[in-house]
Amino acid sequence: MANTPHELHEEFPNRADKIHELKTSNTHFSKLYDEYHEINRKVHTAETDIKPTSDEHLADLRKERLSLKDQLFAMLTAD
Image (cartoon, rainbow, N blue to C red; front, top):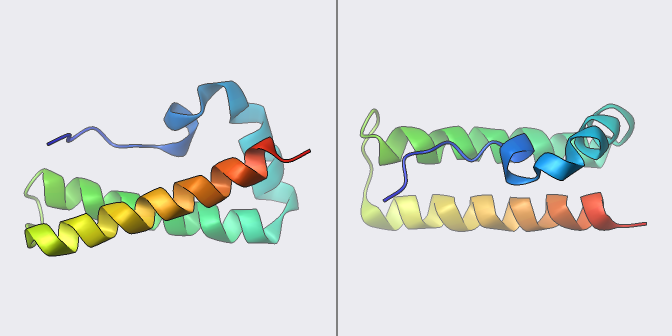
C-alpha cells in the first residue's frame, strides 16, 4: 500500500508549465485539477489511517483518482 501523495506535478514533472498554463486558462481543466486533488487527499488520508475507510471505499476513491488523472493527462497531451 503506497502512502505517498500523488500530486499532479509529481506525476507529470515534465508537464509542470502546461499544468500551470491550463489551470489558469481552462476552467474545465481547473475543475478537474481541483477534483483530482480533493480525491487524492482522501486517498492519502485513508492509506495513512488518518481517516480509515473500508477497502471497497478506498478502491472506489483510487478508481476515481485514476479516471481524473487520465482525463487531465489527455488534456495535457492534446495539441
